[in-house]
Image (cartoon, rainbow, N blue to C red; front, side, top):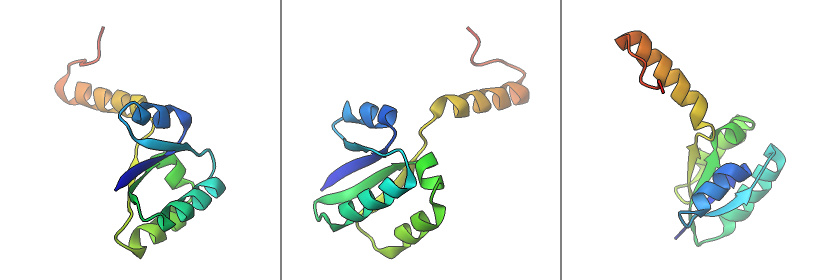
Length: 102
């Protein structure tokens, strides 16, 4: 079974370094078309979708994940830097220590 990533070029390119096939998708209309095409492919076992793209069509995504077992649909965060900063500031507040200082 194959794994396919749908999302912005940055995350598609990163996962391509690890051998994951990817399709650059920038809007929700193209996402729906690509997901429907991939659902018909019996070789696809996992579809990875960037979180912000999935959020742009939440109702479709919720219906998709409740439809059937395969392919498995997994949402991946596509902006790690912002979350790292938020986590770092919260840890700093809790521990009174700046983990990200340079």
